[in-house]
Each structure stands twice: as structure tokens, then as C-alpha cells.
Length: 253
Ligand SMILES: CC(=O)[C@@H](O)[C@H](O)COP(=O)(O)O
Ligand SMILES: NCC(=O)COP(=O)(O)O
Image (cartoon, rainbow, N blue to C red; front, side):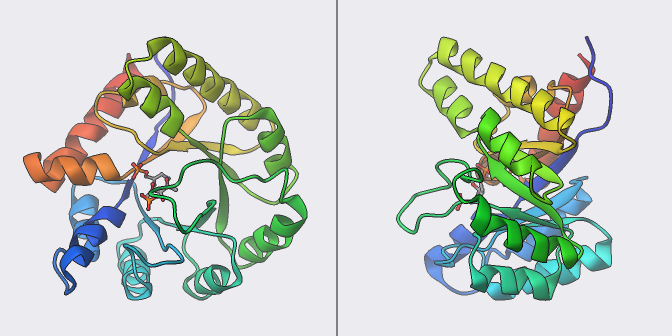
């Protein structure tokens, strides 16, 4: 059955900064990439200011905040729940603040935030960001305990980590991918029923995005690494346009 409702594409430009930082200097500039993404029809820009600044820097985040304000497009700032990161978010006041788990030695964001286990620590941070006017999002696994814990905070959104689904498909394990997809669907239903807006992201590609885009409760997908990689072959604007078309077509099918 075709899914009703528009679904937003947030383009994560972190890995433009990874490429820039490989040589130092200013090229390629993630803020220029954000401008191309906006021109290509991105519905939002996502950027993760990591504690180790391995890709996006404080100066990038400041310039992205100015650009998104000028272009009237939502900026989704991903951040660890640390005093330092919260103070950056409080100063820049992005449209959305997405709290993610971070381990310094990890290659990428390997799992969801443990909202249930860190509830007492996270509640005041979420409240602080919400009081500053940010739409607060929690990047979690599609696990009923985590959803219940997220719903008992002032968070507005949960973004479900789709990395395990993407990895299962990469490994050719369709049975495992189907099982994880079902958890992601059930998570969407539970979170929506609990009053949370539902987003998905991590590891999404041209080949694996359609089943996620078809999830009825999905309101936004955040996609970065694959789009930036594919931009090497197609160009950034065509890569974003193709992803947007695949999402729209999946939604309509
Ligand atoms: C939370 C998340 O999934 C994003 O942060 C994204 O993956 C880009 O950042 P990293 O690749 O540094 O994790
Ligand atoms: N929150 C997920 C995100 O912003 C992009 O993740 P990825 O596509 O870079 O894996």
C-alpha cells in the first residue's frame, strides 16, 4: 500500500569534512556542500560535531548554523551528551539537536544511545536543549525499552539506527536484515504511538533505502556517508537527487 505523507531527506555533510581534513586546509568545504545539497532539494542539513573533531569543526558548525538560518532550512546538529557539546548547541540553537552516543575510538556511531540506562543523566540535558528551543532527537536502537525511556523525556523525536540493517544486507544475510527491518518497523509504530516523531538513519544507500522509506511512521531519513561517496562518481547534486527520487518512489509504491 502506498505510504501517505511526505518524508524529509536530511543530508549529512560530515564526510566532506573528512576529505578536507585528510589534507588540512579548506577544500572541500562542507558548507559549500550544504549549499549544493540545499540546491538539490535536501529538506535539511545534518552535521555531527564529534568530541575529537575528526570531521566537522566548531567553525564549520557555526557557518552551517548561519547558512541554514539564511536559507531557512533545518539544521540537525548531532552531539554527544557532554557539557562541551551542549554548550555549543545552546549557543548555536540549531533547529534540531540529536543526541548520539560517542566512543572516542569507534570508527563510526556503532549503536544507539542508552536512554534507559542513562535516563537520569539525560533528562536534564534534554530539558536544557528543549528550553533553548531545539527540537530534541535521540538516536536509539529500535528497542521497546529505549523507546519507552525516550518517551518519558522531553525529546520530540527518535532517530532509529539503521546500521545493523545495512550491515546485514552488506553481508548477504537477508534473513537477518528482514528481522531487523521488522524491529525498525515495530519501533516506528511504538514511538509514533508514544507521541514521538520517527526518523531513521545510518548506513543507508541507494540499494537499501526503499524498505526504510516505506515505513509508514517515517518522517525523515538522514543520509551522509553513501551520498558523499557516490558524489565522487555522480556529482553531489545528482547523488542527492537520485536518493530523493528513490525515497519518493518507494513511498509511492
Ligand atoms: C549518528 C550518525 O550516524 C552520524 O554521526 C553519521 O554516521 C556520521 O558521523 P560518523 O560517521 O562520524 O559516525
Ligand atoms: N544520523 C545518521 C546520519 O546522519 C547519516 O549517517 P550515514 O549515512 O553517514 O551513515
